[in-house]
Image (cartoon, rainbow, N blue to C red; front, side, top):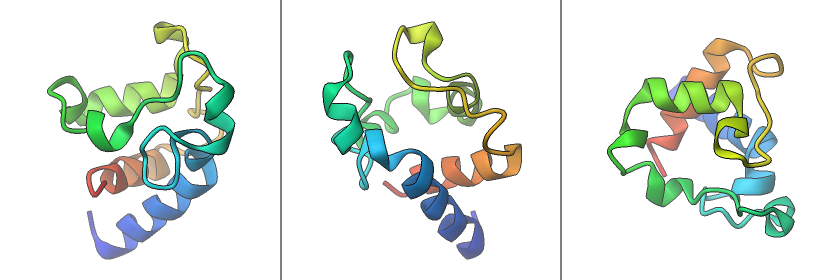
Length: 94
């Protein structure tokens, strides 16, 4: 979680995630308002036991929300693994 990785993670989050999850990860992004179910409030959920595991976050970002019946897309082909880890590091700062 170096300064550079956190900065890059924040940039990636804004580019790929904030549209639905909101700029502060509160599930209130403009594109997420019309989704059912609404995007997760990551700032709150990141502190839950299941989400405290990095492997769970990597799986969710990589495979998307199909397993939860949500509209979250899979990012495993559009965001490389190293950058997905950077997003996870950034999520820990929310």
